[in-house]
Amino acid sequence: QVQFVESGGGLVQPGGSLRLSCAVSGSIVTIARMGWYRQAPGKQRELVAHILSGDSTNYADSVKGRFTISRENTKKSVFLQMNSLKPEDTAVYYCNARLQTASSRIYYDYWGQGTQVTVSS
Image 1 (cartoon, rainbow, N blue to C red):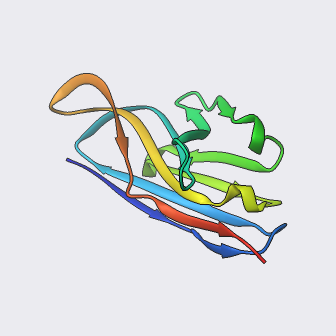
Image 2: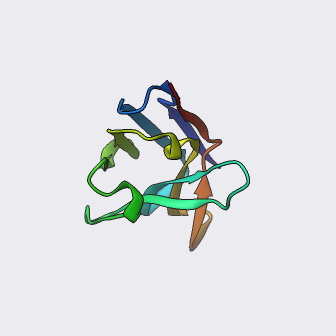
């Protein structure tokens, strides 16, 4: 019903940059919020950044000033520009969308399959 296409993960040296992309498709009526979460081995999944339908944003303290989230509404896409990457940014990054589908008026959270980001020298 809802499909995700994520891309942009990979291996990068400390101080480097990566750009994650996520496109969502399906029988979507309204998207309230899109964002990125991450999960490192042995840790809980945590918020990285959100962007709401009005383009307001919210960032985890650990990424403020280094990461920038943006979205392209007509294509139902969200992007995460990650600069000055640190080894502690290593994790699987998951795209998230809170949205309504044609079959339900209730907003649910949907998740992408995840993309690995590894920061290492």
